[in-house]
Length: 102
Image (cartoon, rainbow, N blue to C red; front, side, top):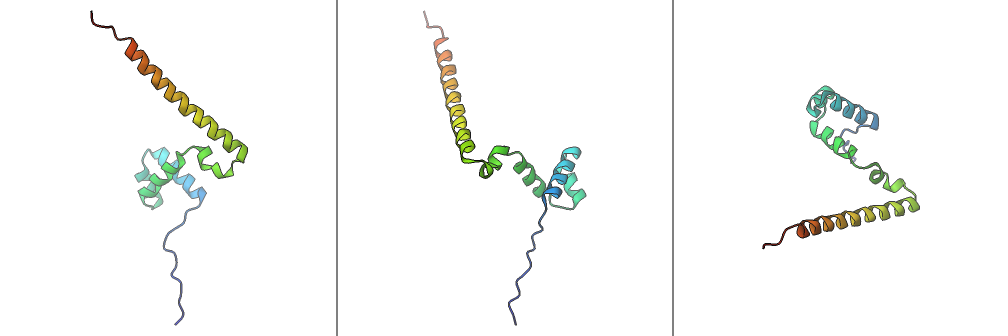
């Protein structure tokens, strides 16, 4: 008897179906209601919602040309450094604004 490959039991959804499911979930304000209407597991919609919330640049990171990707990395590093500097300055203001005991 030949080895017959078992069919993949996972159902695959195309991008149009995912977009429609997310739109329906947003309109109904409930992923569970949308999942019931589409006859799919609510966890799947939650996963799609989480994936849709990722930044577009991060999701398309592979599609960016190397020069743009390098600039994006530099800008993100600059933003992190400036946020750290701001935190340090806020702490310094809090320390120096305290009045010394007399």
